[in-house]
Image (cartoon, rainbow, N blue to C red; front, side, top):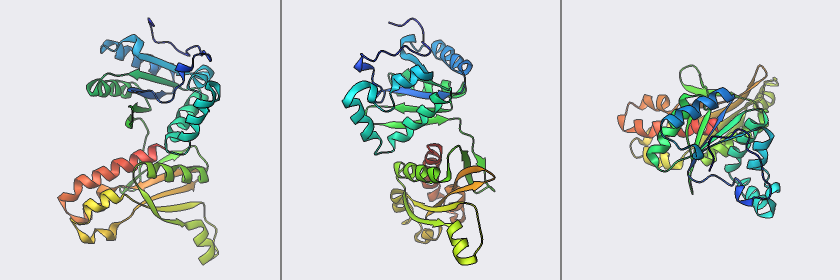
Amino acid sequence: MATSAVFCKTYAPEDEAEFWRYPSHKLLSAFDDAENVGRSIDALRRSGIEENAIEVFCGEQGEKQIDFSGEKHGLWATFVRSLQALSAEHLYLEYYQNELHSGGYLLQVAVENSEQKNLVARLIHENGGKRTTYFGTWLIEEIANKTEHEEQSGYGFRRSVDLSFDEAVSRIKEALKEQGFGVLTEIDMKAKFKEKLGEEFPNYVILGACSPQHAFQALPIDMDLGLLLPCNVVVYEDRGKTIVAAVEATKMLSVAQNAELNEIAASVDEKLRQAIDAV
C-alpha cells in the first residue's frame, strides 16, 4: 500500500493490469502546476480521503502509464483505443494527452459514493483543477471545470481554443453529438460571401444544432418556438485565434416569456457549455 501520493509514477510495461482503459469510479482533473496539485492533495487528505486513493500522472511517465495509443499494453489495449477513437471518448483522451505533453499534471482520485464524488470534485475545483471528470462503469460525467468563457454581447458564451479552424469544427461537431445534439445546418460564411459578393472573409461557420429530446419537450409548451430553433453554434477565426461560441438558450427563449421553458433552456445551456468545453 502506498504511503503517499506519487508524482510521475514509475511505469511497469509488464503489468497489463495497469492499462488505463478508463478508471472505474474515479475522478480525474488536469492541472497546470505541481503547486496546485499539492494543495489539492492536502485538501483531500484533510477531508478524509485515503492516500492510496490518490494518484498523480505527469510527464513522459504519465503518458506511458495511460498509454494513449494502447501499443505498450499489447493487442487488446490497442483494440480498446481503436474503439474509443470511433466515439467522443477520444476527446477526453486527447485532452489529457495534450495536458501531459505540454507539461501539465493529471490528478486521479478513487471515490466510494456520490457524496464523496461531489466532495472531491469541489475540493479539486477550488484548488485549481481545470477540468474534473467522473468515470463510472458506464458513465463519463464532466462535473466541474475552470474553463473561462467570455460573454459575447450578453446573448451567448464563447472560448478561444488552441486548434486550427478545421480541427475546431470537427471537434465541436463530435462534442455536440456526444451531448445529444444533431447538426441540422452548416453555413460556410466565408464561401457564401465569396460566392455572392466576391468579397474575402475569415473562416466562419455557423452550425444549427438541435437536441431532439429538448425540442420534443419544448414545442408542445409553445408551438411557435420553432421560430427560435435550432441553437446556433459558431466557429470562426479572429486575429489569429480560433473561437468556438454558442447562443445562450435561456436568453434566447426568454423572449417567449414562458416560465415552463426555463428548466428546458437551462438544460440546453448546460449541454452546450459541456460541448464547447470538450473542444
